[in-house]
Image (cartoon, rainbow, N blue to C red; front, side, top):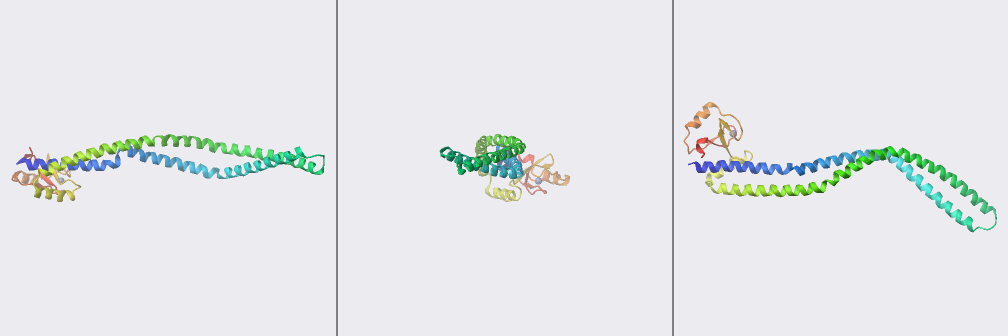
Length: 242
Ligand SMILES: [Zn+2]
């Protein structure tokens, strides 16, 4: 007599296990850690983006200055080369000499501005450096987490396969009509079609049964299966189980 009810109870248990396992897929420790890593990196990127926005004007001014200084240095070199091969002390040589002097003093002024800009950028560099370092350190953990996640997924898959094998084995021991009834109820009851009556409570919905109902179940023939009035699951009584 207990055999079909024992099998039903086992099926409910293995079905509950399978649901828990399937749900745990989304919350594997490495998956959670990877999501946390993503949000940490996103936060760092936002902070770096804000700093970038703030320093954009200074960076652009610095780039312009660097180009100007470079252009002047080239012109100075050109003129110096020409002067080196020029003969006599003509007006042209004099003009070149004046231009070189002018270029050099302008370049000095620009280089001073360049230094000032670099100083103005220092606080940004100081703020960015630890963020960049933190980002690198965070990203360095990613490959390990991905590897761990793969291991966790493989292990979970193994557990699911094992539970599915147990499920099939238990199902094969239940009368097809009863199994179909169980499956129909399970569909509307979060995947588990049977529960146990434990200390006056249904193990499926955890609600207590009314005294009248408990009394009615006591008088019910052993071969009849009760239904939980609250959740609609097949409600197995202790006396039906071995
Ligand atoms: Zn219930």
